[in-house]
Image: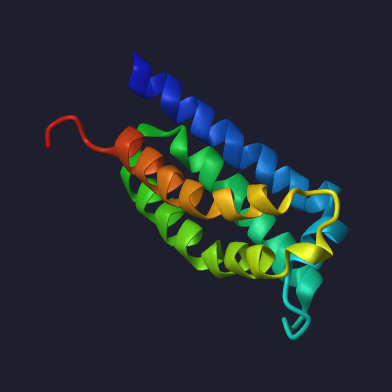
Length: 122
């Protein structure tokens, strides 16, 4: 029961984050290094990926593989979190400490998605 609640909460988190990429694209633009090619494309694609991952987590047949893909996604976006923490002065509305705390939280998210998508048989 707790596992399924955790799964739905994680999927909801990813769904909200994905939608946020479309509603707050300018904020996400500020999170990218200046040298990022096609930044809005990167923002919208990553938002679509988060939405798709959230939806595929809900289906038992795709859940395990989607958990692995969500882990890969979280690892791929981790450098952006590092960039934000190192350039905290650019984000006046976000406390610097929050940007640094976000780094280990990324690994909690990885543990979380793997835990809720793990097969019961294993």
